[in-house]
Every structure is written in C-alpha cells, then in structure tokens.
Image 1 (cartoon, one colour):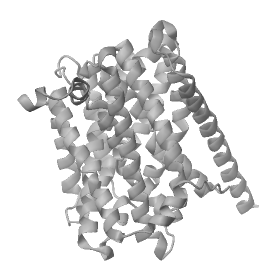
Image 2 (cartoon, rainbow, N blue to C red; image 1 turned 180 degrees about the horizontal axis):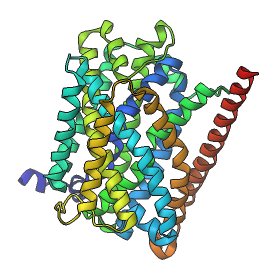
Image 3 (cartoon, rainbow, N blue to C red; image 1 turned 180 degrees about the vertical axis):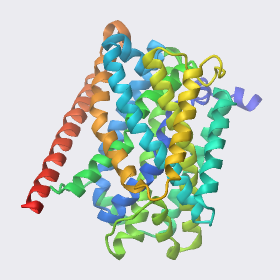
Image 4 (cartoon, rainbow, N blue to C red; image 1 turned 60 degrees about the horizontal axis):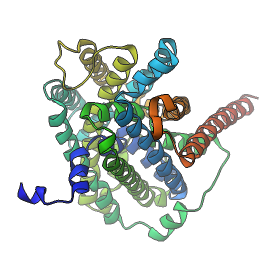
Length: 418
C-alpha cells in the first residue's frame, strides 16, 4: 500500500481510471475479429498490413472522442443521440446496432465452440457452459469486480504475439507491407478492407466505451490520464491484430492462399510450427471469445436502454434495471442457441457481421462528430481540427468503399449471368 502511495500523482490517477478504454480496445479482437484478421493473412499474406496504421489512427480518434464526451457530459452516446436527434432517429440506430451486435454475439459463441472442439469438447457442452458463465459474471457481479476480470482477460492477448514469433515469419516483408498501400478493385479484396475496418473500429465500441466511462465515474478532472489509457489500449489492440495477420500469412498464405472456415482453422495451421504455437493461438481464441461474449451483449444492453430511456448499469440489481438485464440475457441465450443449430452458415455470418459494422460505422461517426463539436454540450472540450479532418475523411472513405464494393459485386454478378 505504501509503495502505491509513493507513485507520482498522474501515474496514480492513471491506474485509478484504467479499465474502460483498455478493455474496449482489447475486446475488439474478438472471435469475429480474429477470424477476419486470420482470413486477411491466409488469403492475401502480408498485403493488407498497410491498413493497420490508418485503422490505428481512426481508432484512437474515435475512442478518444467517446471518452471525452462521457467525461464531460456524464452521459452515454445513445443517451446524447436521443436528446439531440430525437427518439425516432435513436430507434433506427439502435435497431441497426442490435442486428450487427447479435451477429457478433453468435460469432463469439462460435469461437468458444471452435476453440474447445480443438480439444475434443463438443459445442453442445462448451456453448451452454460459456453462456451460463458470462451471464453469472455480469448479473451477479458489480462494475468493479467485472472490470477486474476483464482486465485480467486483456493480459492473455499476449498469446498471439508469442505464437507469431514462434512461427518465424518474414519480418522484412511484413514491415514493408505495413507502409506500402496496395489497392485492388475486386470484391473479395474490398470486402476484406471494409471488414478489417468494421472489426477494428466497430460501432458497438463507441457506445460501450462512453457508457463505461460514465458508469466508472470518470470526470473532466481525471480525463487526461483516461485519455492516455484509451490511446495505449488502441495501440496494443492494433499490435495484436498485426501479429495475428502475420502468423496466418506465414503459416497459411506462404503455403498457398486459401479460405479458412473459422479462427480455429488458423490455430490448426500453426500446429506444424510447434505445439506451443498451436496451444497459444487456441487459448487466445477461447479467451477472446469468452471475453467478447460478455462485453457485446453488455454493450448492446447499455446502448438500447440509454437510447430509449430505461435504467441501465452493472451496479444496479435485476429488479432495478429489468429491461437492461433481460436484454442482456436474451442476447446471450439466443446467440448461444443459434450456434447449436446444425448446418447454420456461421462462417458467412461472421464475415457478414464485420462488413455490416463497416457499413454502419459512418452513420455512427456522423452523430459523434456533430455531438462532440456542439459547444452547448462540450464547452471548451470540442474537437480539435485534426480530429474532425480524420473523422470526416473516414466517413467519406467508408461510404466510398461501400459504394465501390456494392458496384463491383453487382458488376461481377451481371457478367457471370450474362
């Protein structure tokens, strides 16, 4: 205790506020994210690594904006959208968010099933147990106990870094690819780019981070340290994504580009490079899937209840926030149940969910930019010019990529049928 008290005050405050930003960024590497990064490496090798630096910049800007809005206003993002843009607009945004998040919840229970099937545990055992565990974690805990478990889960992401190092990929090629943009006008390549952006800067993150900042009680006086925590979390998240893509490029693409059917396929491909690489990747997948299976329903419940004016929060009991907890429960039960349906096209749904995230993100960003530049709300804490440039540029590019993606897909379909 005395050692902690001797820490410099900024560092002491940093350890006090750590949680929302770091957790939000790390859980972004969920089963759907791991599958998307793995697929990018398996199909295109090191080629798509150039997307990670601009994704990191966009992630830092958007997450910092959210944390700042939460600290200054003391309100969640969906709450602010309802107050400033009306209930009808909020309802449409919430409906789209629930659809996108539900596909992500399914993806994460599929990740649990895939990870444990590698160790001969059938999904009819692993998925119900996982669903029960994440439900009890949130419903029977409080914010501080849940946050401590989530922070511990963040540490295990180092498994991906160690697994990639054990494979000995081409570090020179990966370094060059990270700074050399390559654009291809084909639907698969464009879909992968939109999916990478959608899984890395997901719409749910914007709602969850702001709600978590508010529930933790972070205010303007703590904000500078909270801002550092948000930035560190974003950078670590992108570093983990880099190592996942590099590992799959070395283990799969270098033997011949191919589709993978799940993140577990990526883990199997690492087995020839050593049992430790396989075990670490598998453990990382299980951890990420369980972690996100807790956070994503929680994020959805926060967003919907704030947006529609219902009581919400992990610190509240079931009877105090019934809609919040029933929505959380429903997403877990339905998400787990769909995974257990024989023959359900889950892999397509996983990649589709990431593309939906990429398509929905510009809409969410537009609301965020307008809110964070509202002086009546933010006072002197409105956006600096650089943040607005990056955010508006992201909106334009994402819309353009989506239009081009739809155009090239229709074009190819036309010529195939002609």
